[in-house]
Length: 97
Image (tube, rainbow, N blue to C red):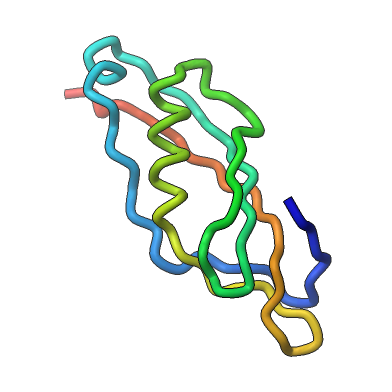
């Protein structure tokens, strides 16, 4: 991933929530996934890597798939959009009834 130290960091744009994997829900799995996301100067997502796993592969995969569909307002350097890196935490929690 390319990294830039922008004057103005990237900001969230369209961020649809991930689908909670059915198998993970049935097993009662919860967790926090932290992703390193490359935000391109277009606002689209470039490379995405799991920085901190939830411990459940299904949750990690759901987070990766969701973030790949996101858009951002790109970071800016000298008034121009630039590629940058952001850390995205995504928490999966089952609601108790």
